[in-house]
Length: 130
Image 1 (tube, rainbow, N blue to C red):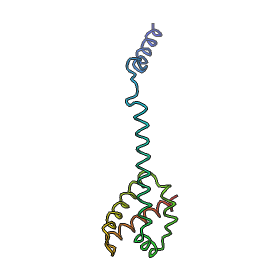
Image 2 (spheres, one colour; image 1 turned 120 degrees about the horizontal axis):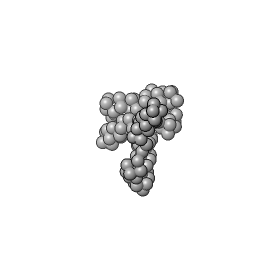
Image 3 (cartoon, helix red, strand yellow; image 1 turned 90 degrees about the vertical axis):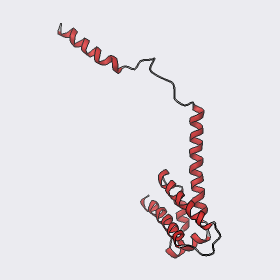
Image 4 (cartoon, rainbow, N blue to C red; image 1 turned 90 degrees about the horizontal axis):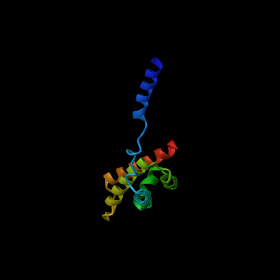
C-alpha cells in the first residue's frame, strides 16, 4: 500500500512538470523578422563606429589629442574592440562633438574640448583594459 501511495505521489508531482504539446507555441517572431533585427543591430553598430572614426579624423580633435599626447591611430584601432555599451556611449559623445564642431566656428569651445577629452579618455581606458 505504501509503495502504491508513493508512486501515485511521485506521478502527481511529475505530471505538472511535463510540458504539454498544446501549450507549446511557435516562435513569437518569424525568422525573417529576427534576421532583419540582427541586420539593423549590425548597421547601428557600424554607424556608431563610423561616427566615432569621423570625429577622430577632424582637425580639432587631432589638435586636442596632440596636446594630450594621445596616439589617434591606437584610438582608431580600439574602436573595433569596443563593447556594445561602450560603443554606444562613445558614439553619443562623438555625435555631440560632431554637432558642436559642425557650426563652423573657428575656435573650439571649452565644452567641446571637454567632450573630446572625455571621448579620448574613454577610448584609452578601453584600450588599456584590453
